[in-house]
Image 1 (cartoon, rainbow, N blue to C red):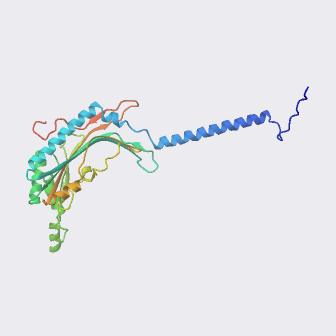
Image 2: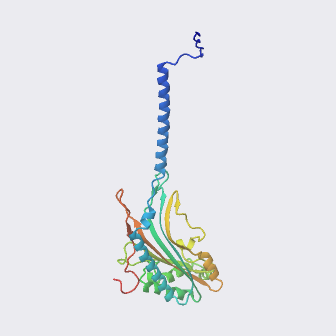
Length: 307
């Protein structure tokens, strides 16, 4: 019968129960630390990246779509009214952008970013070109805005009903004590004026519908709205880390290119821009579906049929 082999010494002392417990405890501690760091990292990330609003659901709701249709009809009527009244101007084209969006941002350095309420806005800009006496043309445009029911803020000492004429007069007003050369220079300044209009008090207190009329002389670009600076070749992405959007219409024109072509045969260009903020997200209780507030007054058309 073979004799049992002798155990070969390993060179290490035998593992005690205390050592085994300590090793297991250290392993558990490492796991806890890793989980804690992961939780802290996720908390910091969520603090800096709050949950975005559901722009798609808000934009595609029945109430928002109805408000958009009403805003579209109003913008089309207003643009048509200007084109009919300004029969002496050559139509160049219309730029239209319609979207619902929300953007995240911090109010100050170190503050937590917050998502802005979802806002739906339609911007329609019609471009025209004309010649003749610019002062007379501005006077006619002032008459058109009055006829369609728009109101301009008081401009200096001038009657707000003649806001465009007043803006040109202010642009070409020489400084006090100006000499003959300065007076001549001021009178020759290229026309480059725009006026923002709103609905009269009582017609729509939400201020969701706005108009801007801008006139420029070669080589200027008329107006000062989103439509003035939009780049048709760069449609914003629908999703980004700090931006969410849904586009219903993306048919912008390059204001610079359109007016540059017009100056080949005309002295002045005109931009008539109607901007309608037709729906916005209201503060809501947690887990409540979003409901839009239509800023459009369905009656408003600039005609006598509206109260």
